[in-house]
Image 1 (cartoon, rainbow over the protein chains, first blue to last red):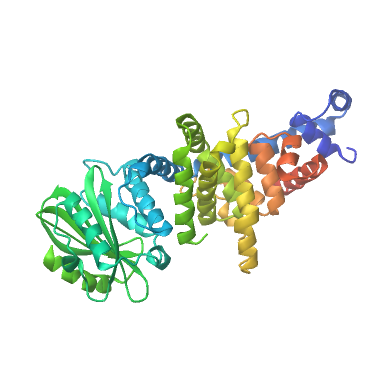
Image 2: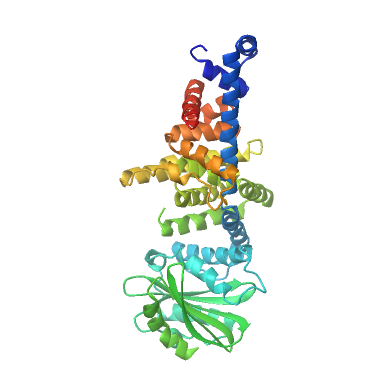
Length: 254
Length: 182
């Protein structure tokens, strides 16, 4: 073995030698058993490395990543048709995210025929993206708030009037339309005193009545119920009892 | 990236994306999906953290969608995506981690195969990956690009901005680490 032989052997294995270098090295290999052994060992190492990296590839969360990308594409197709102009970039972003995640759900196998609360999982997932900043610039006056609520009421077929959706301790921020598997989905966003986003969602999905229940999922708590062919939820990144308190008023009204 | 910023970035990406031709969208999107696993592997090798790898792949996809109109059809999409991923890692994520004083995570444990049923192939693979994980980041990256991704020395040198000799010395160091496994 000579100085630099490992690099030369590696380059031979990797087909990186020019014709002259290659010829010279092959000639040496023909007469040098130790060098040949070293070549075999290095080739083996390279195969082990490539094999280990191949195995690592199998551990990649491809389906999850694919769902994210597919959701982006689905959201982009729907985004130009979205209805409301909410009046701030961050809210527009929130809406697009909502649409994205609505599409995302179908890519996750949450399509028709799956469990009835899958739309809630989709909401919980995009709720993850909301921060106090998301709604900080949404300060509609009474007329604008009423108009937004009127628009979502018509779509979802519920009386989501300003008085009906008012919740003590929460500040109304905005309301807009989404859809999940073709069913109109109203999202009403509030913020708590500390700025934490709270969502009240209603979807006209024909679900059978179900009593309120509190669920903790993905670090969020929500209260879920269904009545009169519509499903509802109140969700926030808060402790379950706190969300249950906030939901009580809405549960009594819807 | 803070969630609110990510929301804005995603919205921005989608707005741009919607204006692009259907063909271009389809090419970039299908390419993204096809290369997700390899992007994630590269991200994991760089970051040594599965959470960071997820974020890095997501950020790469968003950036690719934003800039899809800059993608030349003669370019290899996977190489273009890798360059985006590396740029985000170096300029945004790693820089932030270092700035925050969080340091970088030991890659030994991150580069393993979970839930593999411990079949012999994966046990061996994990041993090799653990050895790779003990290498400095630059060596890990070089080994991945050349031995797993099939970059030539010249291509790896161009991608990483170093001479071919540096590529060869990094590979030699990786091999030396592996040889100590025996």
